[in-house]
Image (cartoon, rainbow, N blue to C red):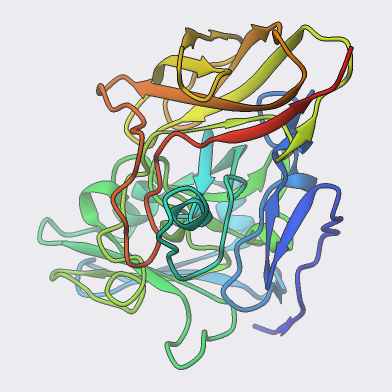
Length: 348
């Protein structure tokens, strides 16, 4: 197998992205007028090092370890020939919203200062991970399933790798080779990646190289030093508006946004246009999927021009609702508080 390293491959124009080192955050205004899925050209990129270029003709995915009865391997074409499954699912960085610990709550957290744009929903197609594990004879004693990527080693920690509990691996995890109807682009994991619905993006290992099954709990830097105690994603909401947007003159407006949760479907979204003094229930449209997001809208006729603060608050089917504040996290994960989104209304 041969592969060479480059930086991000796809264009990341500043009109669609905020550059974050080796990563790129989606601008939410870029979702305005789009359909249910995030277009691939504006899907956020989270890299630990750089995007590798992998030759699919020589690549193989290996499943091995003490937790299976026999090691097995598949080529790219063999995977594509297997019975497939298609899912609409969000992938979201665990640090999405991190900058608001500082800007909104006055307690900055270290790490990439993501706004709310480290998320995207795509239509993924691939092979259920459980099919590969069963083909290798997964044992009842299996505890953890360790997926490892083929991107360059990160500092002195080695290649990105993070275990999944065997129960999750046998549930709804996908070994995906297509994104939005096309082969995975390099920045999003070509030739194959994991898609772990509802869980933080670090679980959805890109550029998948091998899967090792253990009969004991496994620890790597990506579940101890980084991303510790990170699994299902909390409830969040975002407006399809630029930060500090100046709205078109003349109003009234239809404010649009999306809400999501790793725990279950969104069942209610409330919007405030006066900084949280009053709230109104938002209407919703389009698909309403459990591991993706809910698009919503609300009409607004401002009573005055000038600065305003918009807020959106969602509740999922488990009863989890976005709080007014999120307890500080030392690595900046799990920010789920209602975000105060500033906008300006011009004179009509």
